[in-house]
Length: 230
Image (spheres, rainbow, N blue to C red):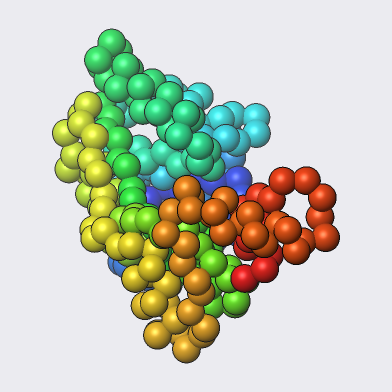
């Protein structure tokens, strides 16, 4: 049974992560900053470290450097709140560069659309589902995206940390679903009103022009004009 050190300064998120791990047979140890993690690492033995990057006083990168001086083999899973593609790309390059140039033992996981009953962070896909159920999204642009149960993603991340090959990247995904089908499934399961689906971004101005003529707003019509009149 794996002992996991959870280093996360957000107490609510830390508690949720520990609960998730505990329900799956792991033994989590919560701590809330890098200094506390140092003390625990000196006193106890852990099988995996789950660590936030952005923390006060001692950040995740400083903690990693210290851990590697004590233990070069323990798997470390890094968490980050950065959601933009540029930050993710730079982070991936930094990790792979460290593997190549400094002998860091690390791999990278790329999760797809996160969805599930235990998505405590409420990711973008789960948030979209909640908006549809609550009637807060009257329409959406049709497209496709990959969905994967958050519980499978969590297990896949742990497996990557314990069994993955250093310097490799792993895409954690499942099935591609169109927004139209996703909306239909949500409305069927939740018993909520199905939202409208627009074919593509290019078609919105075509619908928006006649609506804009009757709109009290001045100036050229926009996608917002159209959405407000649905």
